Image 1: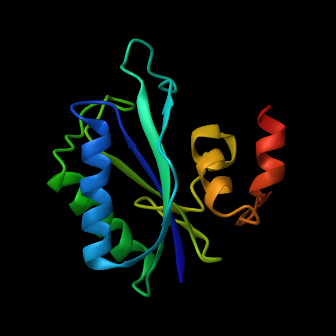
Image 2: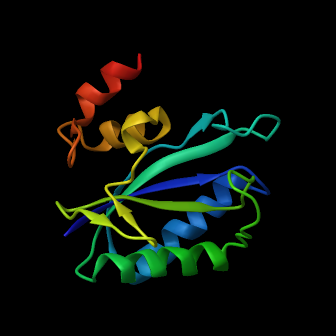
Length: 148
């Protein structure tokens, strides 16, 4: 099943840290494609360094919570420290969508509840999958138009 993962970092060496995360993803899953990385301004976090953001699409058959746990392990391996909400980070991996699965639990919400509002998620996703659809929200192409 296809999983869409947002990649981001704004501390240390973001490009290297994102590549390390992609390498770890590829050790555990089949990485279908990875977008180019983009420099973006932090959202709801003034004064932080700019981010590098991108999207990876992988194939996985494990349950959604297990996939989330694997992403959290990769973040931990990349030096991610969770402190306050929207804190700067060495690596951030967000599960945006997982096939057509919908989840609403304390640990995980699928699709990601704010993905449809985030240009830094939608643009790189559209780049590598122009016909992408965010379940419950519609075509990524149309979602991007609403943000312009």
